Picture 1 (cartoon, protein in one colour):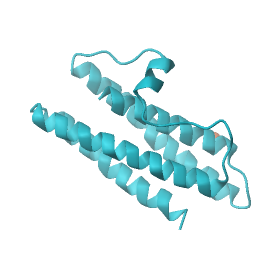
Picture 2 (cartoon, protein in one colour):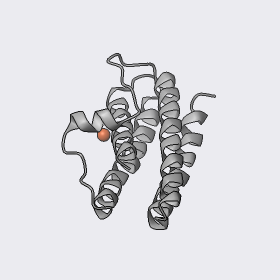
Picture 3 (cartoon, helix red, strand yellow):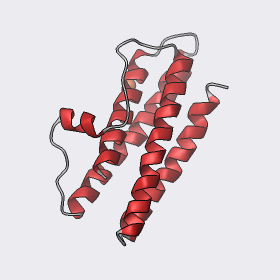
Picture 4 (cartoon, protein in one colour):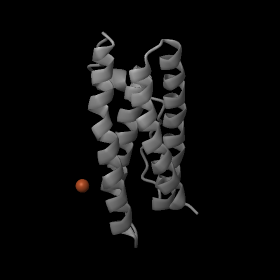
Length: 137
Ligand SMILES: [Fe+2]
């Protein structure tokens, strides 16, 4: 769950930085889509952290720890819009992999409420994946 939290937070942050920095003739489209995307991902952060608390563990308290837990990598350079979308699509796939692992772990631990919660996030990210990939075709 902590890897899912860290990866969720990093995916949110990366999408937000792309929302700020995207440029080009289709600026409004990219800026708007990325805004909707980062807000949806950010809204999950609180729910994931509260599930960690409900499982009697503590949520990370530093950005450094969040970053260690995350599976997302960052670049300093600002990529072209289509590269932003293909990167976010690949990051979204990484997040989906972590969600699938989390669902399997929840099933094995007989924690169906956690499994169902992660399944809802997985459904949302499969839809995000379709949209992100549609920008690059
Ligand atoms: Fe904004």
